[in-house]
Length: 325
Image (tube, rainbow, N blue to C red; front, side):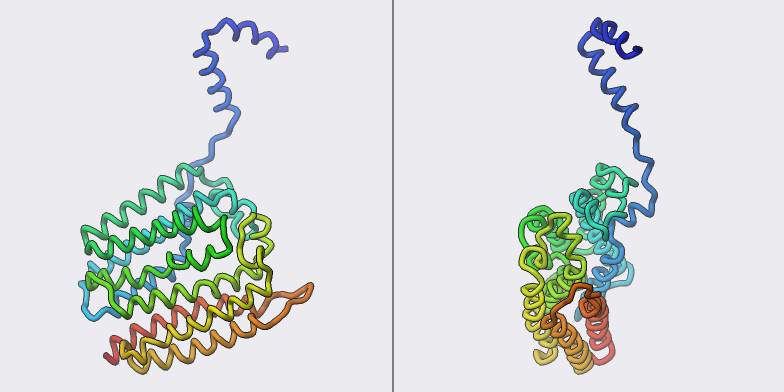
């Protein structure tokens, strides 16, 4: 009754006043999100992923033939961390709709309703700009340029262009996570060289078997979200074969710095042993078939080991260069 009585009175108001009234009612009807907690902003940066990014960047810097003052070295690593965090935040801003459909990502700040998308966008853009500007003025142009390319590649090429369009998203998009060793090396030397390019190639070729192992045991999530990951569009058999095929050039690139004389025997030995273990785990995944209630233990084992593998190989590189150089 109250709504019916108000309509004649509303009709007497000017059009602008009616619009203002409607907007005010919409504001009242739509509850505002509470201010985001600092932990939500931290979650936007994907801190687990950032750990590996920062570590490979640090190893690239420490493996360089020239030293860098500690304060500048810390600044360079900080910039790499902030740039990686910015890329993660912008990725979550753009993929909030996908994340809401996947059990693995439903509790992220945006799909869980703990933060509005505009805040995530501003945070990501601000973090990206600050990291690049600081890298340029505190370190050098080369490191800042590569950092810029890495952020743009992850956000525009992988997230916006590839992720929803092609099962090759991980193959091409893997370059985004391969830039940190180049950035660290460039921060120390102002240029790039053969060794950091090989490290770039190692991470680039490591990404498909690493990520496809994950995609095999969360295939349902990607299918529900409509993301064309390889197991979803091509099936498990093709995915397993591709894991095995990509492991071959990855293994060659991992060991190559030793016969080229770019590293010593410590790196060569560690890389050879750990890569052989990686290849053995990948072979099991590549050749097996699954049953109805398969728990995907070999795939989970390969995924977990692949993370440890990169930490060990890059760590061995630094020890080899510092102890035996």
